Amino acid sequence: MSQPYRHYEVVSQLVEKAAHAISLDPKVMELLKEPMRTLTVSIPVTMDDGSIRVFRGFRCQHNNVLGPFKGGIRFHPEADEDEVKTLAALMTYKCAVVGLPYGGAKGGVLCDPRELSEGELERLSRGFIRAIAPIIGPDQDIPAPDVNTNPKIMGWFVDEYAVLQGRYQRGVVTGKPIIIGGSQGRDGATGRGIMYVIREAAAAFGVNLKGATVAVQGFGNVGSYAAKFLYDLGCKIIAVADIFGGVYCRDGIDPYRLKEHEMGTGSVKDFPGTAPISNEELLTMECDILIPAALGNQLTRENADKVKAKWIVEGANGPTTPEADEILKEKGVLVIPDILANAGGVTVSYFEWVQNNYNYYWSAEEVDRRLERVMVEAFRAVKDAYTERDGVDLRVAAYIVALERLAAAMKARGWV
Image 1 (tube, rainbow, N blue to C red):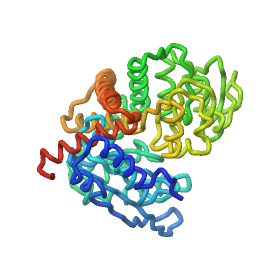
Image 2: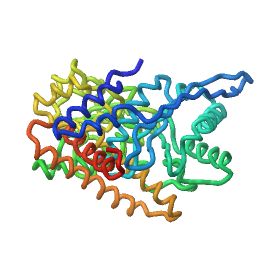
Image 3: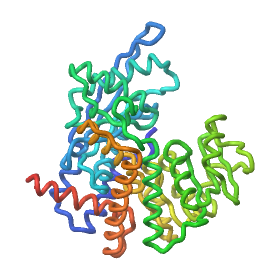
């Protein structure tokens, strides 16, 4: 079952709220109302036992006024057309808010990768790229990893596309292994972007991060790196949870040691010197900064009134439902929205694409420096929209920034 926040109409309501605040040209809204294209495909895969199983896949391209479509591909048993349509729209606004020359797209395959052998997974991956090949390309639509996909799968994607085209084009996907054109700094990009946004928000709102307490839901690529980078800034990580359980220590947790423990045991559970904590306890515990970096719909009307965090920084896409948003706003909780907070990943994906186009590659330090500039400029643009308009929160302010850039591009191209 799709989670409520994923519904396309919820994103549309956020866009309408921002559009109303800036009296946006109705023609722009009309052009953003529906995706430009959604492709549904069937992918026959020969299984290890010789049988054939047909999987269903999707690729949604929302809007490309700013440039080629960009967005990840997820392999998940709950992937569906509504989900990829919603996430494609979020990518349109996310790219616009951080100033990337990309439109929004998303893809998904309805499957559970845990049930597939590596050979079956490779055949499925190559079959999906063959199915969507007519609508992707380095100057048309550039996929990337997402839930349950990774650099290895991106390697299969780029190789299969090369077979189809008769030439190797590294820039057709991002998130690849470094040896075949991936970028330095990609693994930690989303977490590092979160850190930059929190750092800038602290400076803007007069908050001292030294000793600030942080709770992190999700300890995968996003949550673990965010915890490490904030720890390096002097924050105190007091709670972390993953799908199997959570840990808490008021005196603080070293996220580097916790990651070593998680890599060795498969979970953050039972980390020495900590007490067990449930997911719900983490979400409602007293802390300065709460980072939901796992799944959507974690903060809802049922638990939002119990939230004691001063800030919520959305590492995941859509962790806060609209009902929870209203409750948190009334409580005075500052919410830094997903389309700003977690945009570090797509930003470094853009850097990878640029490097592929030039066939010249940057150091990790160069990537981090460029990422910092993008995230700082994006935060300041959103902060300006927030302070200039009474009654809007940071989420609406982020959509205002995105809509103003999309509208300017549409006008420049003669669409409106």
